Length: 164
Image (cartoon, rainbow, N blue to C red):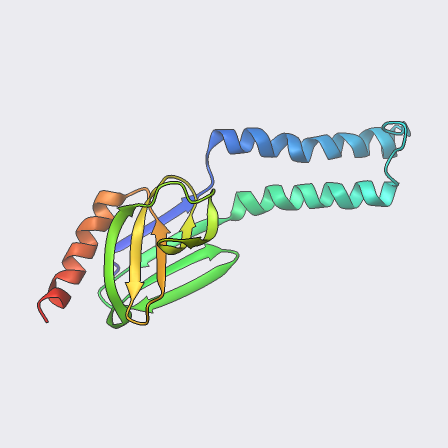
């Protein structure tokens, strides 16, 4: 089984990290000031345990965005995608009614988006993807940064299906 198309996408937008880094650094500064220097933050400081938990939550979000990725693999047998660490799916071409590249527009952000006209959208950035409708009526869309390459592979794989 040779893979026709493979893409790994991550959250690499500079503006996202410009927002996320301070979200983690500020609570770390709070720990330094309140726990190490012994200077309470504000008029009603957080209890130390709550400050530590809050800081851990902020760093967890930072690490989540660092390690999240959307992996897509397509071969003549199936479409596989994994939105690490949330979901891993596979669809056989025999289950596919239609597949095409689309500009899905703005679907309310990035990640896993439910309820669009393309069904569930899996994306990390941009607005282009592979829209798939299954024979059972379910729909999904997998974002891509390589629309032209994806379109060539889909055309090649879907061509024999169209003549049946």
